[in-house]
Each structure stands twice: as C-alpha cells, then as structure tokens.
Length: 229
Image (cartoon, rainbow, N blue to C red; front, side, top):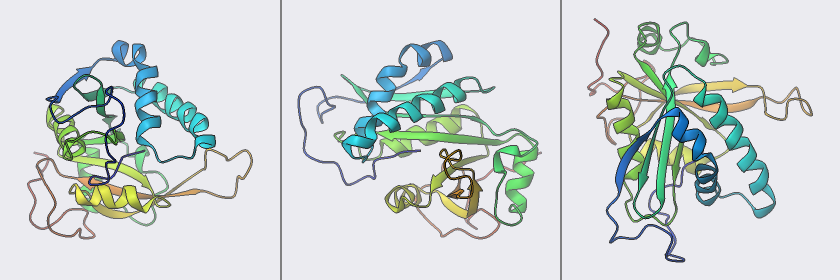
C-alpha cells in the first residue's frame, strides 16, 4: 500500500498534473473499468511512490498483481479522484466474515474488531494513492471516507508496512488507529522464506477524523462506529 503523505507535495511539474484551478471529482470504477484503466492506475502508483528509479518497474509490476487479485474479490470497489488527470485512487473489498484477512495478527484480535468482522461490517482498504502534485491535501481522507460510506461499513481496515514510517504517520494523521502488528510472508519468500513482512494493522471508523489516540480495543472512546444489530 502506498500513499503520498499530505503536506509533502512538491511544486508542479508539467501541465498534465492536477492544479489548484482544477476541481477534483470522485468517480467509482467498476471491475471492467478498473481492468481497462489498469495501466493508468499503475502510472499513478509509480508517480505517487517514493521508490528509486531502479525499483519503479518492480513496484509497478507488484501493484498490477495486487490490483488483479483485488478485482477478483467479492465486493471489490475502486474510487478515483480526477480533474484533467488522476489525482488519487483508493480501492478495497469487504473483509471475509471468517476473519482470514487478519491472519498473522500478533496476539488476540481486539474484541470489537473481531465482532465487526464476524458481522460482515469491516471493509479493507488495500491501496491508497495520492498524486504528489495535487493541491487537495485532504483527498486521501475524502476517498477513504467516501469508499467506507458507500459500503455502509462500520469499520475500515488496512495494513501498512512498518518499514515505511512516513506512510504510517500519514494514515494516523487521517484518523486511522493502530491496533497491532501483522506478520505475513514476504513477496520475496522464495528467496528469503524466513523473513516475514511486519505490517501495522490500522482501523478507521467512518466519519472519524484526526482525534483521540487509539486504545487496545481497536477504537477510540469518542467514536461513531456502528455496532452490529
């Protein structure tokens, strides 16, 4: 998962990037549209990442694999923010009720998160991209909140690489709450099978902006999370 931390947008480059005069609009893409625009979405990924030139090709290919896998998931949904060009993108799918998405969680899963997962009220946001030249510094939060609201989710969930503190900090600034660690096999497991990737598990109640610190139950005390009926 990649996101350009807000407040770190460099000056505008060429005229193809979104500008302050361009009003951003949010648009839902269906599976067919996501597949059709996959190369454009991969371009957005490369432009929004901080990878070195030599790593960009591998990162792009990995993104395309993740997108292909996500598109096949039941309930897949993708939102883009655009003006004259793509300014941001977010996509994901409902977390399966059996909780397999949380595999590798370090310790017991917070009870509230476990209950919401079992009730089918958790939506996983698996990718968030923001073009570094966009002037709308709240676009990532807008996209995430809109995607959760569209699916009437009681809780958003995501996994962020612990080795990328800038992205972790960006998500926390958008109101996400850290509930613990998840250890997963590395994409390079064939080469280094003993080295799992350590990810931060983050959750976001819809409508919750930056505010109280997270608690071990996975939610802040002052929240608007809906409980299953």
